[in-house]
Image (cartoon, rainbow, N blue to C red; front, side, top):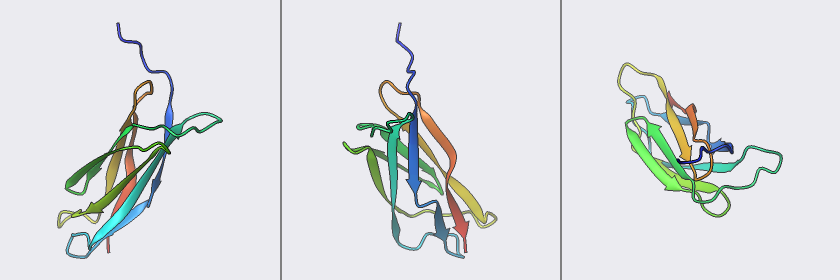
Length: 111
């Protein structure tokens, strides 16, 4: 029997908004950082957590470093012609912790 994870984690995600051009495409690239910590009074960093970003027609994945940070260079995001805003979803998994999911982590906003 596999023991269930009982520890929880928290995430700080930056930036909260990515601008999409009027034609529905992202202009250039942007650095996105996700800081993953324990969800308790100590807020210790969680190393080796797998962080995934999905949305805007793309998917990205990174592993957190010893300070609990995963950094992504995000480019090529897009919105369909009839969509003015959407979200990137963040999913994080780490050994010994419950998975963390935030469906509306980063807003994609058409200018």
